[in-house]
View (cartoon, rainbow, N blue to C red):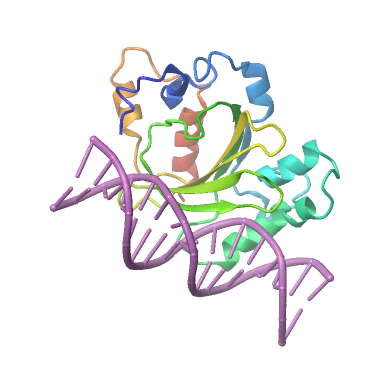
Length: 196
DNA sequence: CGGTTTTGACCGGCGC
DNA sequence: GCGCCGGTCAAAACCG
């Protein structure tokens, strides 16, 4: 964990998202690709909102470019997968976003342990799988490079941390209050409301 | 020496 | 039923 001494300014803490995560990154562009999913589509037409899987997202961007394979990865499919497999993770929070970064792993303040690497069908780039290495925390994330523009990294978070990021703790000690527009703050607040 | 990464094997769901 | 595919496991290697 080097979040407090990270020498790389482009991977500063989560509390600087959109401000200094990458000096070369335009935040407008970043926000275009930021997606949230709070798992509320169980009882509604899933086509109305919360289409968040990066696969679906990619499919939307490159409409019909590589036929078949992308449509297979609809959000419905992902939901079924998550429900069908082991119940280690409550289906609920998924956050996916795409950032322009040379680094595949962004230091988001949490400590991750890599547990798998897989080359996916429609991408020349492998996909990396990480688990939160904090005990009892089942949050996972996938990291892969954009298959069309490898200068972009697609990061997907699965689940909700049952603990705070050490960097958040550090940040809370700072004089400036938490930015209400900060996505991590939003995530934290949605945790408490969604935990019921 | 403990924690992390690597990597091939394995598993289960889905489409055909 | 079979094959494909994404996701996970686990043992060995690696590293500080």
